[in-house]
Amino acid sequence: MKYNMLSWVMVLLTLAIAEGKVVHKITIDGVINPVAAEYIMQSIERAEEEGAELLIIELDTPGGLMVSMHDIVKKILAADVPVAVYVSPPGSRAGSAGVWITLAAHIAAMAPSTNIGSAHPVTIGSGQDTSDVMMDKVINDAVASIRSVAEKRGRNSEWAEKAVRESVNITESEAIKLKVVDYVVPSLDSLLAVVDGLEVEVLSGKRVLQTRNARIESHEMSWRQRVLDILSDPNIAYILMLIGIYGIFFELYNPGSILPGVIGGICLILGLYSLQTLPVNYAGVLLIIFAIVLFLLEIKIPSYGILSIGGVVSLVIGSLMLIDSSLPFLQISWKVIVGAAVTTTLFFLFAIGLALRAFRKKPTTGKEGLIGEEGIVIEDLNPDGIIEVHGEIWKALGTKRLKKGQKVKVEGVDDKHLRLKVKPIK
Picture 1: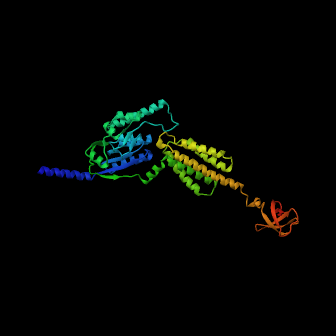
Picture 2: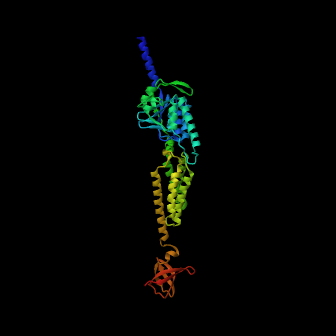
Picture 3: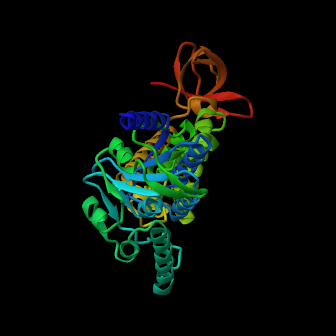
């Protein structure tokens, strides 16, 4: 009886201790970029400082930048808090850089209907050396890196190498059979239940997890990180850069308008920040700027459409070259490029039309505005006299004698004597 009572007391104490434990959770849903790296590394530091029992990274990514991925992997390997990567929800994937992050975690888990793989390195720029020798070096370096990570966590290093060399991709059921991940579980609660009592090794030593009834705290990106994450989208960066260039050029073209310059300056700075997180080809940037210059020149120098055509071609080519990467998720959408090209072309054609109409419009001020206007004689012209034009009194010189009340038409202006040359209207 005493033993039964003691057992119940131990169980209750264990539950009470477990209920006091806290598990941190963050979500990565998108490309692995500098913002995602900062978010994960800050979350690891927060979990360490607050004494969290476990940090769970709920992951769904097609991959991302190798530099950001390496920063994340180094932080996880050196963490003093257990880190679990959970590829979730169903339909998610851990592709490319996501493979490294998953293998580096102390605990790797996947939800049903998820997949992992395709970690073959892809060149991030047409300006880089893409020869066979250089690609072999890149692949061999990636293989050594991923094998080292897999072996440290006791996972299948042979498969990890195939993920790099052959871009293999497997489902969650295959991943558990090949010992690529540790668990396949349908929910976070299930994950906490299966890892309860598991011993993991962190930087300071071994630790036994107590997670069965732990409280989950979700930590979202800060507003700053959310904004920067949105700005790091190549399509957003491209649109911001175009708006910025338009605003600056219109302010220079019409000094004093202020609003286009302010908006353009803000968008251009945001666009440049966005581009620094992406592999940018500056030849593409120059082609886009050159396209805007050609459109503006068309307004000043009518070329019967030649400058406009050159501007469209330069804009499209520059847009295609702007992001220097063969990774689909780092490229600008064709729809965005076509939309920007069409919108820019229509806008400048509209501006060109307004400019041409302004050039062809008859002047309404100065001496040019007086020529062709009609007036009435208010003092006989013989041949000099006085006439009224638009309520203004002018000295006039007629081609012949004209009487008061007769209608006349202005043919010219005598600047020397400040008088109008007129002829009678029949």
